[in-house]
Length: 387
Image (cartoon, rainbow, N blue to C red; front, side):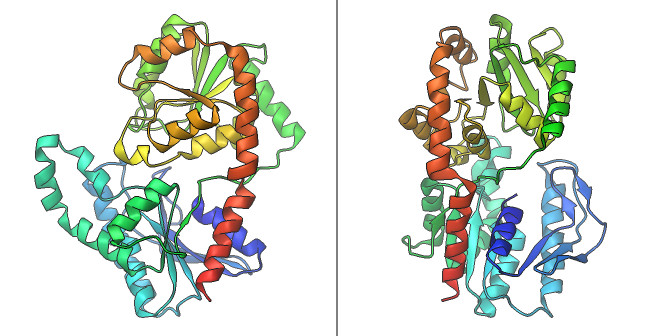
């Protein structure tokens, strides 16, 4: 998402973009073409896909093997390439970022490293706390190449100031003019009225009606990053309708859990048009994230989507996102570890106040987090690296 959004913003300013990416799609777990290939998408956009073995799960050795092979194949492809004027490098994967930044440093090409996840630190989560010291030793090559990558780039980019501070600590340097915070916002999609009408009819058919029902919605990948237990508890004790849209490794288990909960609907993956229609019929958006250290440094893209739609956010996340919600009064925070916390809050909520939260959320997005502002600043930062 970040790469394509930035590519489009750069092209709109008249720049030419070469986008390097994996041939394997992380979300669908499918290969795009099955080989290393170049696609001339337009006169100003060339996409180069690098082959790798792929993997079936977000977590596991297969993913690490895939990233290692991807980095090896990328290194081979870079041998006969001319350097760009400036480069924007996504992180993670660690391995490809390391290969690319090493090549750019040798070519004396200015680069901006975009850090969205706290790798390799997050890999330690897979191990019991007592074994994390040993795991860190076993994963020491990743920590080494991570630090090497952070120190070779011209500038650092991340989603919040706390996350950027974490990056600077890895790089062992203070913040400079080359470093920037850019939120994970998305451009507004123009949707035809006829398409929206079709999506609304579909919502009616599956029981998500435009009837004034108080409704909380979640749209995303159903995986271990989220804790849906508080939502199920609230569904058992309130008349609120909950919509959990998306799919993922834990979707099957969650569908079994909601069989006796008529006020919970799981429609599966939905399109952008269906997402818009669902947002239009929602009272608030849900972000039931687990309270993890790296999450506490970030503001998820779900927050910006909710703000763009003018919807309050009900979330379990702490840290900078919680601070934003409480300071700007655009939502409600509950405890992720206490299953009854969300239930209690919703039972005692005055939903008339949600209208005021909605107005504040929409205003905040327009004034501070809009796509035009965020990516306009990022394009300017990249342009300045050439000077």
